[in-house]
Length: 166
Length: 223
Image 1: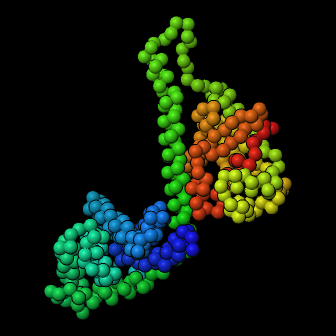
Image 2 (image 1 turned 45 degrees about the vertical axis):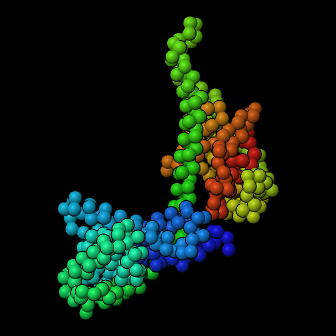
């Protein structure tokens, strides 16, 4: 298999998962696709190097999460500057809007880094060492983000928050 | 329900409801990547051209300024439209009718395989012959074609600026720039991509070798 085919194969295998992860951070489907595509463009640019890594998929996922976190921060700043709350009607109609709207809204109210940590921890099942590396913070800060996010989500969703993370 | 369980189940359910289409996305990604690569290439070429221009024009100009005007030497004037036109005269230029083999040979000469060249010709449905025409008129660069003696069309429309006796920069309506090298040979002009690595430029783009084929198969003779 030549380099181009390898890339295409990787793309087909990883793209849906990357879009899903980014979507869970941003809750904006078309933006999530754009960000996933930007991450794959970066992968294509560095493909000759990254294809030799043990897990090129992890590389592109890391890039995508970083781009998504940056985008979420920008969105939040913009909302603050224009005195808006995160506006629902600005978001593209999503194919998953009806799955758990309460949970989506609660996650969207979290700061960007907390969102990313929650998604990486609960959806991707990553260890905190890896989450901290992707989020660009220390492990202890990663745990702080997770605990704060759980506390806030528990309050917003009226769910039980135990001391231990499961 | 605990918040942990709600998060795990809720996030999983939301993710499972998404069905991104990797095939459509792959095409978009490859197209965007090509555009980015071209933009980078153009910027590099423009930077190189600017550096050369600076050395060739800027330095002698500075020297003249430092020395002051020499008695009896006429003052230097900026190049006029007429001067530019004399570098690359306006008009219509056309290649001879080129056979399929000649077109393939032009691509092969620039490092493409015969298979790649044939694929590029197939993408433009060229079965036997092609004639390419270049019209330069009032800053407008128009490349048109006749395929197999019957199908006609316009391939490329842009504005152009002659930089010097061998360099012309062509700017597409979208802002993309291509730097060509040209050489006048009697009433013909020979055109090629300047400082470009066609293999790099055409990575993953089956149609891209057509660019080489159009410009580099044969000189364009004035009609």
